[in-house]
Length: 193
Image 1 (cartoon, rainbow, N blue to C red):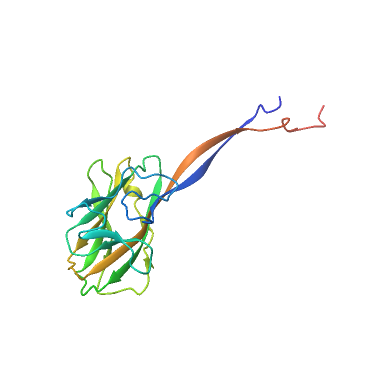
Image 2: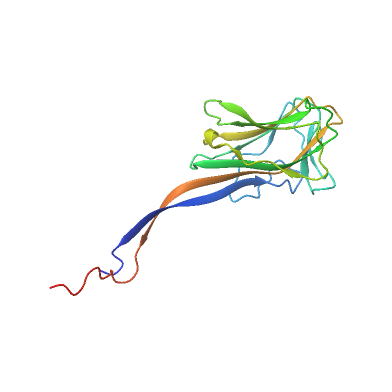
């Protein structure tokens, strides 16, 4: 019978949660999937254009997140629940960091058991003339419906700067596709009596 066969096979689907900070806003979303909420400041004034954490043009990239001073965080949630793998990346630039005690912690939480971990650190005294690309940070162990990424400034003074741009989570999920085979069924054997 024509189109009576079904073909079922698994395949990977790749999507991204991404914010390139194209506007002075904590609501930016340029990925294929939308974030679960906006960026939220913790330990700062909540103003995207003022305080310890601000979005601004730094002269090299159009808009970036500027961290200076210590003790403030920027957090954003993403629903990763249907995915089997998640990779975090971002661009960064360090300016005027004096010691290894000036750094930005990158934390990831699953939001369910409140399990969180520092998955990377951008530290001085190295400084960057151009934007650097982070390593691929595997955050698959923290996949949940309430996964969150947090950047926290530590040890930095008013003249120490770390700039972040193009924060992205690349997420991969496995799905099963079922298609009907078109045309007449194949002739599996012939010439036998």
